[in-house]
Length: 391
Image (tube, rainbow, N blue to C red; front, side):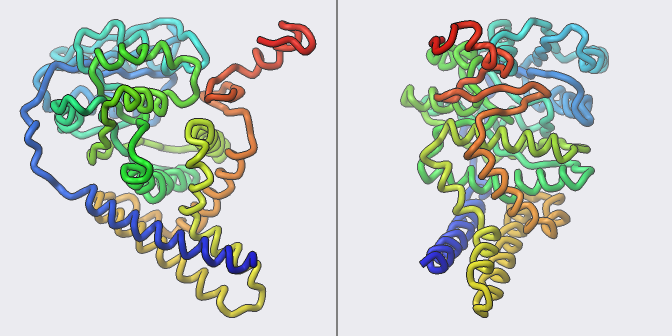
C-alpha cells in the first residue's frame, strides 16, 4: 500500500513539473504591452540593513532606469549602519538622480515593514515600488513593473526572482531553488489557486490602495509582509499581477547556516501564511519521493527506473526553465539539482514542525496568524503576566 502511494505521488509530481514547464513557457512569451506609455512619477522604496554582496552595483541599477521621473528612498534603522557610506557615494555619483537617505528607528518585529512604512510616508509620489536591498535590475525594470497598473483592476504588481553570482556551494543551491523550484511554483500559483500574494523582491502599487489596507504600519508585526500585502490588496477586489520581468537576487558567498536559516524562515512563512497549500508542496519533491520509493521497493527492479526518470525529468525541466528565462547561470548549476531537491524536502519538514525563525541575526517566535515576536519577549511572557497569565 505504501509502495503504491509513493509511486502515485511520484507520478503526480512528474505531471506537476510538466505542467509547470508548459506554464513557464506561456508566462515568458513576449506580448504587446498597450500600456507601455504609462509612466507616472514613482517613488522607489529600499529598506536596508547591512552591506550585501556588490551592494553598490545593486543600488546603482535602480539609479539607471529608463524612466522619466522617479525618486529613490533608502531607509536605515541604525545611524551607524555600514551601508550608509555606500548610499552617500551613490548620491555623489548620481547627482542628477533624486536619492534620499532616511534614518529612522524601526518599530515592530518586522523591521523591513517598519522601514517601508516610514519610507512610504515620506515618498513624494502616488505610485510606490518596494524592492529588497539585494536585488539588481535592468534599465527597463520600472517601465515594465508600473505598466500593468494602468489597468485599474490591477492593485499590485510583483515580480519573480532568480539567483545571480553565487560564489559558494550553498549560494549555488539557493540560486537553484529560486530559479528551478520557486519561480515555476509561483507561476503555477497564478492558476491554482490564483495569485493572492506578493513576492518581496518587487512590489508596485498605488498609494491609495496601500492606505486602504492600513499601510505598511499594519504589517510591522507579521513575518510575511509580502504575503500580507498581496492578500490584503486581493481582498479589496483588486488583482495581483505577476510580471514576467525577472529581477536578480545577488547572492555572493553564503554559509550553510545562513542559507538554512533563511530557507527555513521562508518555509515557516509559507506554512503560517498558506497552511492549506503548504502540504501540497510535496508535489514539487520528485527526487525525494523517488528516493523514498526506491528505499521502500527494496530489491524490486522498478526503483531504478522510477529514480532515473525523476532525475531526468527534473534536469530537463530545469534546462527548459533556463532557456525560457534566458538564465545563463542555471545550466551550470543543474548538476546539483538532486542535492537541491533533497535539501528542499528537509527544509519543508523543518518548516512544518518549528516555531522560531532567524532573521538578520535575530530570533523570533512565529505566533498564530503569522505574527512575530522577539524570542526574548516571548520568554519573558510568564514573568510579565504571571503564571498562566494571558497577554
